[in-house]
Image (cartoon, rainbow, N blue to C red; front, side):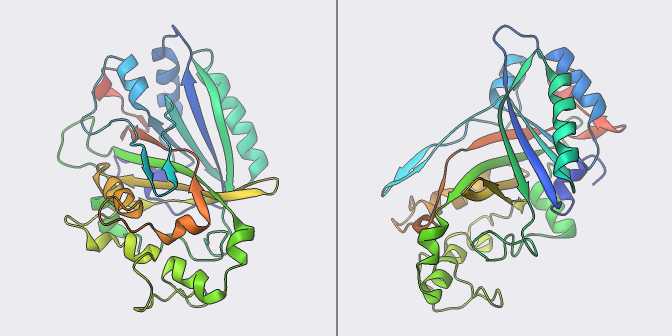
Length: 293
């Protein structure tokens, strides 16, 4: 779809940098956003606007709202909203560093950097646990249907909603589990990535099977591992034509439906969570017309 930000539907890159920004008190975001819009629109940068920024512009995007916060059986799902989110994509972390400096200079003084996360592709796009990530991701037209807004008019068609969470892995704890228990966490054999029927109901593939929801909860997942010193985990990124699919899966994972907690929580926890609206593109730049810009 030529009105979607190209990076949304493109394959996961070799390296990436996620930057979230806050809006400075009393600052006018319009000049910085216009400058950003003019320089974005390519596959090397995906931009998302948070609910607070849309509100600061006196705008409204149907379907965009605050990230939900859940607590269940010792698991807390935090909400950590930000005004603006940028996903820089590439192959060289040094290049991404300089691009992020240029981007942040362009956004100043209206926006201040809140968090930076560097990420990378591990082996053949695996999670650091060793299991393949993004299995059964929709492809081609199915990805467009799942991830891109259509039929809502100019300024909305081609846009997308994105859920972003940073997950922190306790890899030492995971690696102490016997191989069979590790497989049971995911419901897949790490060796061949095959699902197995005898997995427990807590297995991630059973908790998050997108086709098992009504309506089906397909998302375009573009998650990548992160590491900082000896800490590591996954930046979970899921694009959708709405936020409904992500919320349905999150509710089931946290046991809101039946009290069964997803097996992933045996070794990993989310430490952040935010929603953003990713505007469409027009004539090679971000289309902010739905916000009056």
